[in-house]
Image 1 (cartoon, rainbow, N blue to C red):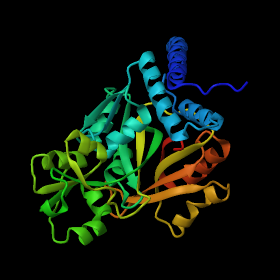
Image 2 (image 1 turned 180 degrees about the vertical axis):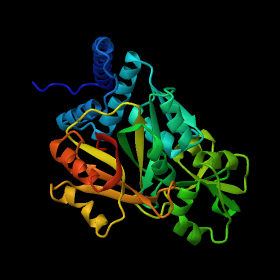
Image 3 (image 1 turned 30 degrees about the horizontal axis):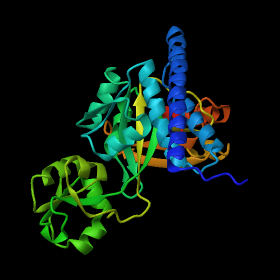
Length: 359
């Protein structure tokens, strides 16, 4: 005899039963997390381990057969981990504010909503908050795939003792926002200089001759526009929701693959995860062929370099500091040997941190 098709009420009852089990399991998980926190506290271990988080994500995503999407599974576990960490110890994270900026979005992407997220007015303020122990972590932008490096962040590492413990890659989409939502009403456009530069071609084609006004952040731009019916802001969808603005056009960035990389800074180093990146800065002696020689220690050992950037050394005219990212952890023998060899031709060398590569 063929089984009857279940009714809506029966299916909903099944969902309710599954939800009940999920709540029970979340609380069971939380009780285990509390016990782990007690053990960490007794042994003076750090309660937040970025490498462990990465392992959790990788394991769960590899086990997921679908149809539940991996992106949604990752988002859910981000909040589960965030709430679990809050059970172990309150976690304060400083970021380059104000709220609703892309720095805010990147911070939420890594730490979730259960952490105490603190917006600050400048990159030096974020460093200072962490250095003084007022925040456990700080999140600062370091480069954009379209516009390049954020020089203020690189310069801060020269004198700071803080370590890079994680990185976040945020896909950045810019919306044009206004009170009316009509393109013809716009007489001026506000935003941070970086988003303006990332949308310059679109602005020239669609709003030729309209003044572009630089402000401190995309969130500040949205706040200004919330009180001006003749203006528009280039900002995030979150900023539009926060300041009750309408979308004039969405995704106006000139490059489709527009990413901003953020670094997480802390006073303690990150543990080895097995899939790491190391960032260093150094200054080389002024000798013929020195720029070629500084790459040999890595090339000879097959170590991949993902980035190299030079900045003027502000303490000495016409001297430069190099920032370099490589794949691997500073504790790995081959990486350690390459860094030791490089140090021989440097005036100074500083390891900024080894940390899990962004997924």
